[in-house]
Image (cartoon, rainbow, N blue to C red; front, side, top):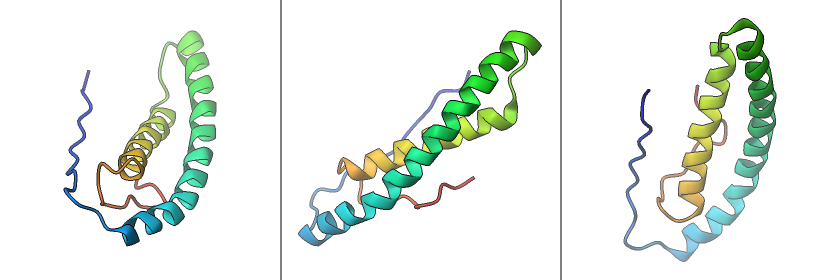
Length: 93
């Protein structure tokens, strides 16, 4: 099993302008995260039944789940002021 690592550079000082940009930038991030979470829920249900009946995990659905976890981790690190590095609006991968 592979472990998950996240390296975050916490800024010592942030500007007020960046805070305002962060609040506006958060709107599309939350929308995309919501859509990804719905897709991940569907993938989770399909994978559950796939393992139950076929005894195999669908790697396509597992990749969607991994992409969602990566995206949400980057998004929340940005929104909770752990980093000033903006995540992409559309997830990579």
